[in-house]
Image 1 (cartoon, rainbow, N blue to C red):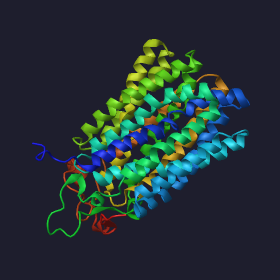
Image 2: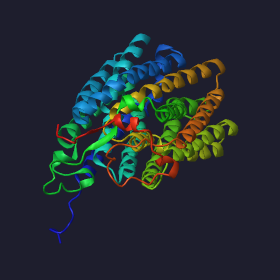
Image 3: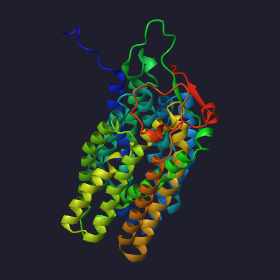
Image 4: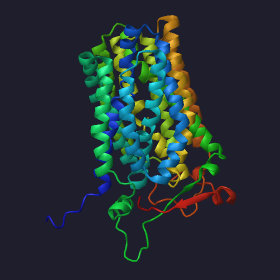
Length: 448
């Protein structure tokens, strides 16, 4: 019986390690940003808008470097970029720990964000896209649970760390955590291609007589950026994350502004993140069975918009917060997942990281403005009400753009992508002009 047991596909082991890395990486960065606003206000008397501006400036440089990171990933492989990025990110946390001036905060946050781009979302999303096809949605969903685990597990630990050793010491702890998790995983577990372990995508065997594993195919960046579909997706994602990311940065300060303790605020963030584990698994399971990720994204943005309006109307009552958390859990469930699913279905896998890098520039525009604008609104009004209105409007824009993208035809990829993708609706299979097909390329799956 033991000899007859099917060997577990190496991609699943690698995905498990990636979930751990995502949890640590998101927990000490995105999820914990809000924990530093209060301590920095108290110690340096900086305004909330000024502190949020540090996050915004860092995101600007992170977005500008994204196309280069994407190109490096496609050229050199996710593993090498991830290892270098993890080491440099860990060192950048030591810089953050010695912050004494506002310009230090801006500079060190920028350095951290640039290197974090090399070790966080982009390489892991590229890995999942390379290693999984038939169950890509499920794999992306499992990967996204790492993001939720970061808020559910790491945020409470980071709050305790800040209480115990101060905000400076917590940055040192963050650097140690990145080193302890990312470097061993990147060195011993992560591999760029299924071919590196002698298998094909999804664990399929390389057939006798087959010269090489199957090739990845896809639309080139130069071709994609000439398509209206690409820009509709890009700006829809920008508006979506404008609302979602802006709230994440100010969640803890918002709860504190309505009378909830710092511990209670961190607990609410943790509950929302914990619920996201289940909503992201559910979305990943459904994604492999959904023909239009654009339409699904409309629904996600609708839930997030409803969450913001609920909090605005309820005045942060207990019932309102419960409803908000429930809606936010569902709406944010597919947040980290829709990028790889949208891009791989529309444009293929061969140039995924490079396309994601270009998309990141557009997304970052919204992420730069959102936290700073929300902080400025609070400084001017001593309330987050108009910030909630701003987030809701952005999500309505996102819904509209996703819906328009769902009505456009999909580009035809020469040679086809890897098989077993969900069937597309009739309008989505409309064949484009032959000129579009000429602009697509295929890339062989090779070792590092």
